[in-house]
Length: 546
Image (cartoon, rainbow, N blue to C red):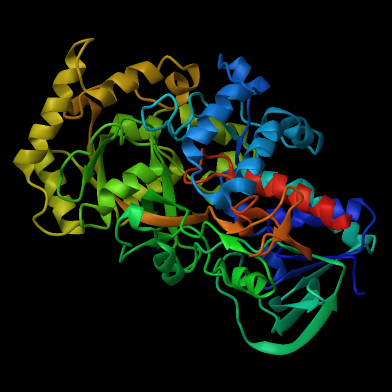
């Protein structure tokens, strides 16, 4: 054999699996179609948020969390309802144990550190036993995505230097080798060398081919978010019609091709219609990859309107229920919507997902970080306001509407109708009672110290000139994550259509729906994607090492 374990994909899940197998003394080959400069895959571009339960950071912020409350939130969000959910449900239980148990200590021992303020992401659908986080659980890594990757990149490099790991870049797997029903290796096309910068499209010119053999293969090749044709084919009817226009939250190489390769070798794909796409996407004015989109991480104050200017119903507020909002907006007949807000709101509440959009956190720059608490919009936000195609900044409502009709479909927004919406909302600000659900949520969420300090602006009238200028942001649908994938047992070993384990074949990360073939069910609680890669990569790497 060429190795004991072959790992397909050099993203976070693949690196973790490779390190775990090498730590167990196994010889490991990592095959990756992209060039070496793309080592780390999508995780490099991430904000580095991790889902933790009852952490020291939560307790310092006055947050009371527990394994039981996290399970209530997880299963209320997952809504498992299929026979195929047997393994995903068991993976969910195991992951909750991990997130409430050794996850933080394990990462801390590897040198990972966290920003002290815990974020409150995906606040939910308004039901105690429904979708959403009851408490803040989004732990930002100091160093963002690269900070999560660093210990595993360092360790795989050390194993490579010692001869236990071989990193084969520009090797694209086109088939799995099987003998007597067992997977015994991979068949690769060797692509020509490429100097393409990280995240950009690399050449697909083939220079040769090679077969590599091992006793176990771990598929850690990611999902389908970069393949919009496949996203549309898999789009579920429960979310309405597929959008004709989407922007890409992941590079084009996240194309789902390897899922089909694993399926041909006997693996079973389940829950392919479960996916996670955002509705707060911006067209990147300085793109890395084609059709590059950036997600706004919004605080809860912006007024959310559909393309025609109608306010979204409760509880579809910014940061509350991603797929519930997506489902509602798909029923409007338009592929975009709007935030309307003020300068005061954007200064305190807007953040952008992505390591490159957060140079202070990514670079661990305390001086730059202090700029977040000073006046003015953060630098990356200010750049989007100046250069981004989706922003309108105006000194009057008439000017704002003119801009919205210019960058949206002409004539859809009426100044009079928008004024009525905003004035009705603003009247609810003028007394401590009221019935506007969003305003009531704002007041309630500011009871959390983290929101009050750096995340939620003090409630104020949108049309108050002192809070201006007025801002409108066109929001696009942004593709991101695959929640289904290769069905695996609790060791990460792939299952077949007949319900038997496929000898020699394992899966981890997004390719496995982050575990089991979809441990998040229909909805995610955020901070679960990187954590799912860490957990499933660790499990599969240890099991493949056998």
